[in-house]
Amino acid sequence: MLLGATLLIFAIVFALPGDPVAALAGEKRTDPTIVAILRERYHLNDPLLLQYWYYISGVIFRGDFGVTFADVPVSQLMAGKFQVTLNLALTALVFEAIIGVGLGLWAALRRGRAADTMILASTLLLISVPTLVTGFVLQLVLGVKVKQWTGVDIFPIAGISNGFRSYLLPGFVLAGISIAYLTRLTRTSLVETLRADYIRTATAKGLSRRRVIGRHGLRNALIPLVTYLGADLGNLMGGAVITETIFNLPGIGNQLFQSVYLREQPVVVGIVTVLVLIYIVANLVVDMMYAVLDPRIRYE
Image (cartoon, rainbow, N blue to C red; front, side, top):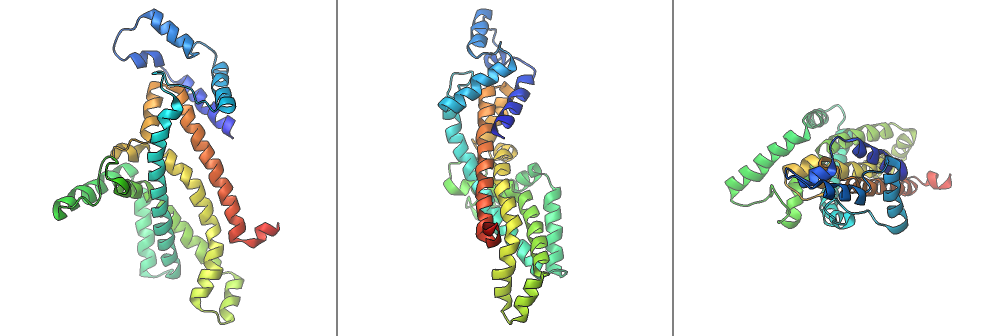
């Protein structure tokens, strides 16, 4: 998986039009001799597969992600930016888990009532509105207007200078669509679980509704939710480009956009390599969680 993803991204960046050395120079004229030296130094004259071999052999055998065309180590460039994106993604994941599961549980227990209809309509609206629109609207209302009304900067709208509070608003924006999907998934999963025979048996034995739902219903309904949350961590980190741009966060999303624009193959492939590793680890954790939630999986 790792080799396939990195080779695919490397090929896509390789196929982009333009010259990365010329992009590095900007509008200034560059001595052709210097251009030739730089192209030779960074193996830009070599075939695609040979360039990929130079890169992937460094990653596998030396843990070296290479250097940018400005001679900055890629690992050093990614270090601080990945921390920003990881903080943003984890904040979004917490919002997603608490709000999505909570609303889904509320809707499932009130299926067919007004609360259920309102939650389903709200999630449909949230899915329909692009993240770009949601970000700017919440930035204006919760960031600018609330500060004007209260005189307190509750939700900072740019940068990371306010510590944890800097991630609250962008974290919610990033998690918005995932919250809607998780709410619907939770509702559907719990409704189906509550129709099962063992739920009726537990109810007939005289167990309280809270015990039936919490111990027997919700625990089994959590399996598809854990799968979604585990896979979505990688999606949140990889899909933070728009959110980081709106809130001016110096994260990996902005860096990825700039690197694609400048055709910085080592940076783009390095970022993708780490994201793929996060996907792999997240799915491993999800598989382990299955055995905790459902003992039958351990026996198999």
